Image (tube, rainbow, N blue to C red; front, side, top):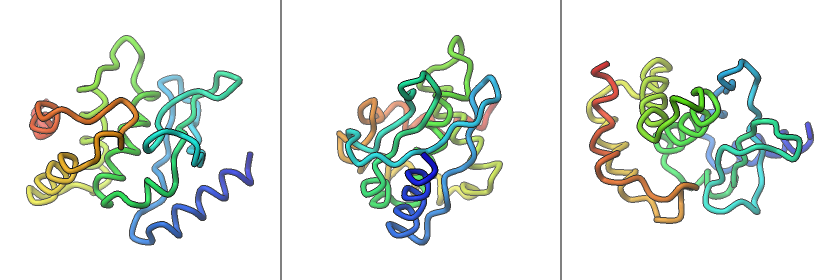
Length: 149
């Protein structure tokens, strides 16, 4: 397992030196969620569980490395949200807002220009890029509203 995680880290570094390592992720119960490379997953991969039922985020390292850095950060944090938000409160919008607020807190998204760039880049993603299908225009347009609460 450690070898597999190490190979993911090396793939991520090799794919894009400009992208930071995946952020630390914890479930709503406080358990750490590992990011695991798996080139067999569809699209980018996503939040799931392993054979023992533990929360993981399975990633396709090559496809992740092809994303613009803002989109990669948004997507990684958003997939973390699938495990970090209590299941009774988890919605597509709550996961989107979790990602937006985390990006702001970690200073990965701090200007209006970055927000517009993220929205433009999300609109340009191939339909099969995200594991639960493409983000709708309504969800992309609603991202700035995450900061109103």
